[in-house]
Length: 212
Ligand SMILES: [Zn+2]
Image (cartoon, rainbow, N blue to C red; front, top):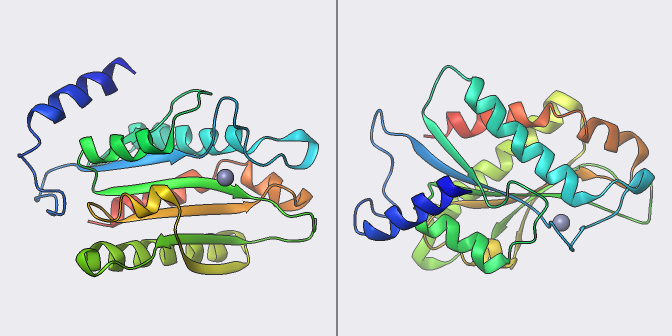
């Protein structure tokens, strides 16, 4: 947390350094902000056996960080909007991405349905804005890659990429590509086991690293 605060301060001081939409230069690290959905008093959806969405989203995000630390290629710096079971406002999640001048924002969530057989992965991008065409194009591309890799590797049903007005997407699209990923249904007894397996994190990290 201290590191984040220091970064927040130093980034605020040099806001005019790197432009928001500028591509990372060769050899420069890409900055990715991963947003584990919910937290604290907001549990999100409650799945099979009382599994809480907020715990799964944090687990996946922390695992992406761990995998990145172990990785040999250090071309990505990853920050989370929360590292613990705390509730961070949506405004502050967006603010962090803005201050860090993120190159990509990825919010992680889990789906839920009263129909226990509902399953599959879906991803959301912000409704296209004429002033953020390039970020919209990249968001859709990344969202498609995410749902397709989980379909290919885990035979998850591909529920597609959709547009949404979620605050974290609406308010980040002007300065970076942003995607909200619903990894799967924690209400589905089989799918929840796969979600808790942690292997998604590697796929997510690999895709992030490829996107330069
Ligand atoms: Zn959620």
